[in-house]
Image 1 (tube, helix red, strand yellow):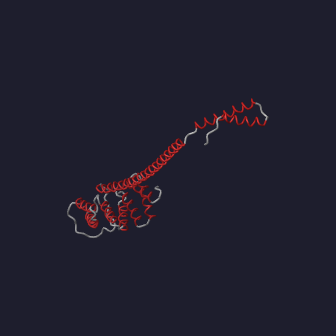
Image 2 (cartoon, rainbow, N blue to C red; image 1 turned 120 degrees about the horizontal axis):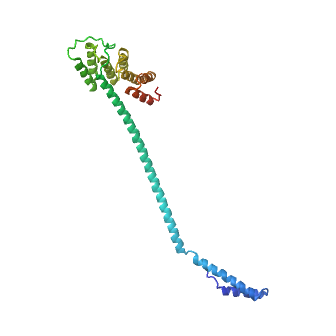
Image 3 (cartoon, rainbow, N blue to C red; image 1 turned 30 degrees about the vertical axis):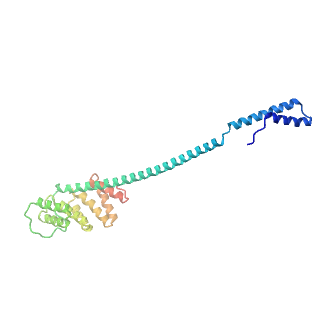
Length: 267
């Protein structure tokens, strides 16, 4: 910016111009000179108050640095939010996996309870259909034979367990474990994937031993077998019967869970 003229010089020049015209007095000229001087002082004051180029450059650098810092902070925050979202997703997956494992454990506990029931004493009854093959009389202890068959079932030797349970039924048809033997034959078939044979054995338990403590288990596993055979309507009907006739049993809880998995409402 070019240097401003001094107030006196400006006033003199203006006064000379006005005097030449002959239209103003010397008082007017002095007043005008004073006004010009005031304007000059105001301009000088504004120049002193205005920031220099160095100050403006420094200010711009500071603003740029702050903007960069804010952008970095925003980027860091976005990364943290994404990481937090991933952690939440992982926790959700872990929770679902834990719920699934708990459900599996519940089923295993219920199955163990069913197996423990095998040692309880139901009313005596006749063995079911299909147990008519003649065998030599067994002269040993019936409980020993039953326990041997049951141990073979637990080891996964299902064919051997079936033969031994049939031998038990042939020699001791009127004992308090006859219905259990029929049931475990059905379970052995089920474990082998012979679902139709399993259904027949479970039917024998339900028809020949209606008061058996294995009745709820037989009804539940019959429903499972029908589902494995893709006979969904019949399978669901059997599970609903478990809930209706054995509402407070472990088997009823398992039936409700399976029905929910199938998208059916337990009732």
